[in-house]
Length: 344
Image 1: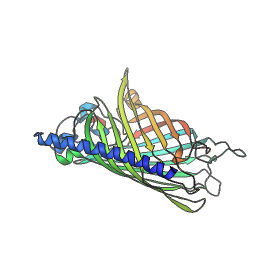
Image 2 (image 1 turned 90 degrees about the vertical axis):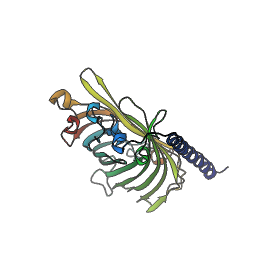
Image 3 (image 1 turned 45 degrees about the horizontal axis):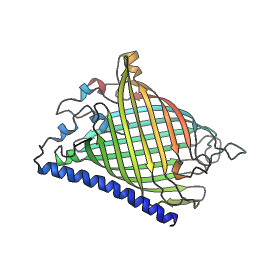
């Protein structure tokens, strides 16, 4: 059996699994409606201690007391974060005179917005990353600069049906999610990614925080400058869990948050190499230093975490720089000055 047929078979099986889960969820919801499930308002569905987490993949938590009340929808959240890591890697960015991957220092600014509305949620993440000279800009003289935009919007089936029909077992809600990833970088390779996402997102029951799993069909295009070609990849399958778990240690309020991505192979790249499955996880623990020092919750947080990427961009492990393990540290500033955490 050829690699292409193996990849097609794997993709079809994963797509069938995603569709089966979605339709099983829908059939269970229909059965519950047929059994006279009570109607509730959209505001009541989204009003919960976890509603702020529903709005994003890893937006910081809110005190449960501020989210109660059937008529209350969680406030929008806007944050600005600074991140630093010293051991990032990019495929084929090498130490001078060797075939060994270079460790790249990057300073990054990240803006995140999350909101809920009557029928669902929206999430936007814009990351601006500046590399050191280990990954130089095209033409040299400075490190490369990258912009990466992530967009997700979900339409909650409970909200659309105006029932709690999609709340059963470990599932709290099911959303039909659409999204896109957009990227550009001024390195020699000059990648320019455009990726679309579509599929169900399952939110599980949590006493505190939120854990969700997205099952997406994915379609990616990448223009690269080395050969001046566009990689028009085959549609593939994506599993995208995300989580937010608040906890306390003494008087310190902390949150464990993050996301992961698993992508199946997506055909050959512009160099004719077969891509492989890739796995990415970015997770961190934040401590609310604003609450500790200034007695103002959700003002500023100190973050420490890890960025791990296996087979980056679908490149096999035999290619240098295709795997990275990067400790990261950062600060997050809430642009509303902590007002939403105080219920104002």
